[in-house]
Structures are given as C-alpha cells and as structure tokens.
Length: 226
Ligand code: MN
Image (cartoon, rainbow, N blue to C red):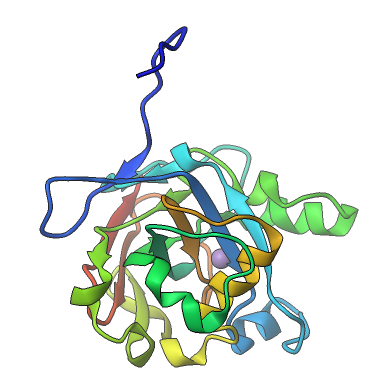
C-alpha cells in the first residue's frame, strides 16, 4: 500500500447478501432518458441523452438526508442505478451486460431553481446537481439476483402518495445502450455508478417528507428530508 500524506476514506455502498461493500469510483447521471420527463422539462425527446456527474463522496446511504443550502426548490428524481464491476472504452451494447455488478434504487436530488438559472446562462449544471448528500442510494442487488431489470417498474412515493412511476422498458436509451454510449465519452470502469434517468413527475420536496423509491427486484430506498 502506497503511503499517503493523509488518509482518505473510499466512498462505498452496501451490497445485498454480502459483508463486502461496493467501492465508488465515479458517479454518472443520464439527462432526460424517459420521453415524458424530457417533455416536462421542455426538451426534444428525439435528442440523444447526455451525461453529467456527481462526486463519489456525494453518495449517501443515510435514512435522513439534509435539505441542502442555496435552494428553495429541491426536487426528487427517482432513478435505476447501474453499478459496474469492470469496463473499458467503445463497449458494444451487446457486450455491456458483462460489466454490470448490480443495480440499486437511487435519487438524483436536484436544486431545480439553481439548475434553471445555470441553464439560462449556459453554465454547467453542477450548482444544481452536485452537493452534499445529493445522491442517495439503496442497497446494491447483484445482477444475478435482480433478474431482468428491463421488465420491472420504477416508482416513487412521497408521504405515501405516488409521485413518479414508469415501466423500465420506457427508458429512451436502455441500460446496455447507456453503458455503450458513456464508454465512448470516457473509459468506464469498476466502481462506476450510473444513474439512468428519471421518469416524469419530478416535483419539490420539503423537510419532513418521507420518500420511498422502488424498482422491481431491488431493495427499496427510503429517506426522510431533514
Ligand atoms: Mn436525473
């Protein structure tokens, strides 16, 4: 082990049925990957998807997620998260599945007001997307246990009321296509998490709200905004 001038923890996520944790290298998010959500954000649904990133230590497994600063419009985006065990560049969609370690339910929390201002100015989205605890995630279920994820549904309730729901098959770009596409932009690799996009129904949340996200075959994600 190489000596470091000071130690840094490796961000990681718990794995279902294992005492070993999944180490996080990078967090990528897909923008506008369900047609109805692209329309609600005022975008053209025929455009190819694009990627933005959050920092690895912005992941959180905590039951209580703090309402972040600067914003008056924090919004939920429930998403299927893909966890990679290997990777490369220019991966063909047909070869993408072999790189998948597992799946989880995640929230791409968004400071929508700040994202909107950034969009207007032609600035990067970081101020709206990248902040402490901005990427809640549930337990990672190994791919073999999760079954055929594309046949499932994704849902989010807030305080027991259904806010977002979609069949996973409605992804504009499927999980293998997302991995293939991202691998042309960067080298994807072990430890990468990809938040695959949110269906329609994104809306504001406030302190005290209880969010429960589910994807068929995966462990649910439950967080309270505090
Ligand atoms: Mn998103």
